[in-house]
Each structure stands twice: as structure tokens, then as C-alpha cells.
Image 1 (cartoon, one colour):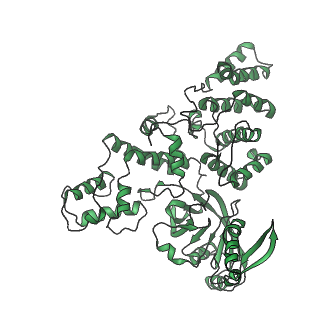
Image 2: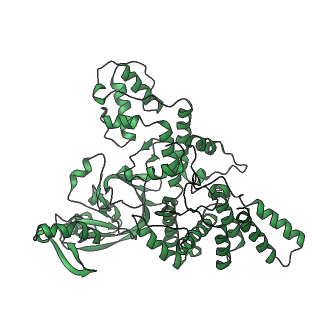
Image 3: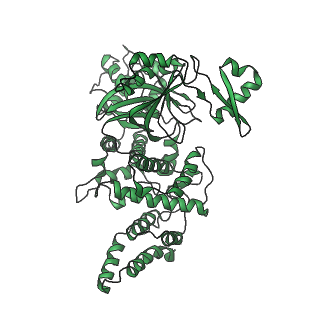
Length: 547
């Protein structure tokens, strides 16, 4: 173990010495000592039992990577420090595929290459490997002895460090902070919060100063930490049907206290269910994604009873996710937060409009990524994905030989033993009358739908993975409003023509697809949403000691 601990540091010292022929021995020694000070000591307290990830590799592999890839001194120091802090635990892979953080970083990386033309990050070999790995949504078996895996792991870390050094203003992400962007070991959420909130920097530069979404959530974390230190909030033990207007009960007093603690209503110790508490319930319902009726359901009481430490865990997880989001563009932007089921159109800091959406159901998880919306397609064909053909259409055809004709579908070819099927434009086309394209490797896009009733539900995870819009006409008019060739009358005609028509958007609009189950809106309200795909659950099990 001691031998492995010394290898990377000794290698770096020797590397410096061999590449400083014109310097004096004294200067070399001073430079080497300074370099060692900037390398985090190996954290031997991290073991497979308490690590965030249970896959480790030998430090000698890192040294060989430096030599084989002719890595520059500065990056050698950073990578050595990064893995010392993790005790040579993999950062980007778990035993069943890519980590959430790997997908988040790769999205940032791709956006930087594609839209910011960052040539320093271009690597065809890494791109090919990551395209394959990210396409495996259901995961894959990982071994730290697999050369392909470990090379990709180390390349990702090299690129992560390069990205951070080149794209984040100096001083706002300290070296040790960068090493903790990917969790290292299971920790107590309250102790982790205390450390995060109490940390002070001599230069008064903090990461939240360059990431406003993170900053707003960190401020709410401080509020919830104070609530935790005061004992949390009371549990509501009565059924929802017992909590209605006009009744007087100690249970109402408990409910009022619960709502007061999180700022949903003002102080009120009376036991009467009145208009004041009804308004407080509406505030809570709005923050949790429910229709604000002022009347509780048993499911909503379950949300109210989630302990404060669990909400703190949720805040920490989502602050982590916000570290992987690109810097918001200054102009037009479209944001879809999957668990929120809402699309937001913004122009700089100003909200233009919101729109209800339907996202992928469990098993058809809409991915998290970023792209530029550059095409509108009127009266589209629906080219059925291979997975849908195999799992749904072929069994339906066996049951009903007229299935394709009755659904206005046709076979256009054959690939890999499967028929290539598309649905014709028309009123019953699953994509509706228009779709909106933003190129991505997941084949995900926005589209209309004939199934309008789903937009009336509070929870809207029903699609095969693409995102359905409640008002696609409004979106089409917004995207083409600066194109004199496409007035609203022509848009309406194209949507109902039955002939597929592609139209380029003159100024492509960035699209951000996120997965936040906790966030702060433009009015300063803290929102929580259901973990519809189980991403929070997976991280909680690896990140915290108390679950």
C-alpha cells in the first residue's frame, strides 16, 4: 500500500527534474516541494465498504497513463491529486455502467465541443467510446481490469480537469472542491451540509458566485439545516379526509405548525381549519407540483411527512447535478425539467412562457442533455424506433394482421431482420402535426400529440422518451416569429397539409433537458418533485450513511 501511495508523487518529482535542465538543483528541489504541496494526500480511510463507488484500480496504472499519453506536468499533478483524494476509486464508472456524473460531464463536454468549438477537448477515440457507453441506457458490466474501461476513465478525468481549468474563471473552483464534484465516500448528510456551509475562502471566491441555480439551492440548504438543528417538523398522523374546512382539531394545529416551519403560512396556533390554512396548503401544493386546491390528499400528507434530513439529502444531490449544467446562454433558451413536467421558454433572465409537457414513462427514461433546436417539421412521419417495433408493433401485428393499416402505418424496408415502419402524417399520428428537432445521439425531440387529456394530470410521465408539448402551435409560432416567410396562417396550413415539411430555424435556440427534483424558481420558491426515474434513490444509497 505504501509503495502504491508513493508512486504518483515520486513520478511527478522525477518528471519535473528530468524536464528542467537549465534550472539549478536548488530551484528544482523547491519546485518539486511546491508541487507536492499541491497534491492531495492519499485518503486511505476510503475503502470498498464506505466508498461512493466500489471499483478501484492500481495507482501504477495512472503512472503508465502519464507516460503513454505524454501528459503535461500541470495535468499530472491534478490527476494524481484527484485520485489520491479518492484512494484510486473510479470516478466515472460503477459496476453497472456510467455514473450520473459521467453523463452530466459528457453533456457539458459535448456542448463545449459542438457549440463553443473548443478544440482542446476534441478526441475522436474518446468520443467514439463515450458515444457507445452513453447509448447503453440500461447499463453494462464494468471491470476495472478492462483496459478499455480504465483508459476511458482516465481520459475523462484528464478532460474534466482541462475543462475546469479552461472554462471556469480562476479561483471559483478550488482544487480540492473540484476533486469533490464526484462524491468520494458515504457521509452523514448533516455533517456534509455543515462543512459545505461553514467553509470560508481567503480570496472570497465561491463556486455559487458563478452558478446562480446552485447558489439559490445552497441558500435553501442553509434554511433546512437550521430546521434540522431545531428538531425538524412534526409528523401528520391523521388521514386527509379528517382535515377539511370548518373542523377544529389538534391535528389542524399540527398541520399549521408543519406548514409554518417551511414558510408556507404565517404563524397561527388556532385549531380551526380556516381560509388561512387552506391558502398555506395551496402554497405547499404549488411547490410540490400539485394543482393548488387547498384540500390535501393522503399522498400529499406523505410528502409533508418526509423527514427534514431526507429533504437535505435531496438538496445536496440536486446541487451536485447543477454543477454539471452548462452556463445558461444570454439570449433565448428552452428548459425542460423532467420531474417538473414543465417546459420554460426564457429570453435571458426573462420568462417568455411556460408549457405543460409529457415526458418518458419509467422504462422509457427521457435523457438529460443539451442541444440547439434548429428545425421545425410540419405534418411529420413517425419513424418508429427499433425497440418499439420489436416490443410493441410485432406482437400487435401477430394479434391483428390489419394492425398497420388500421393505424395508418407502412413498412418501408427491412434492417437486421426487423421491418422498418413509419406512421403517415395525419390526425392520429403519434407525433401530432409538428415536431421540433435539436440534434442529439438519443433521438429525442419535442412533438405534438393527439392524446391531449394527459396534460390535465399533475404527474405526466407517459411517453416513449420524447417530450410532448401541450401547445405546439404556440411553440412553432414563437420559433418562427422572426421569419417573414412563416406567418401564423402558413404555419397552420403546413400543420394540416398532410405533407411533411422541414423548416430551418434562423437562430437556433439552446435546449436544456434537466433532472432536478429540487430547485428554486424565479420567485424564490423552493420546489420538490418526485424522483420519477429513481435517480435520487440510486445516488442516496451510495452517497449517505443515513438513508
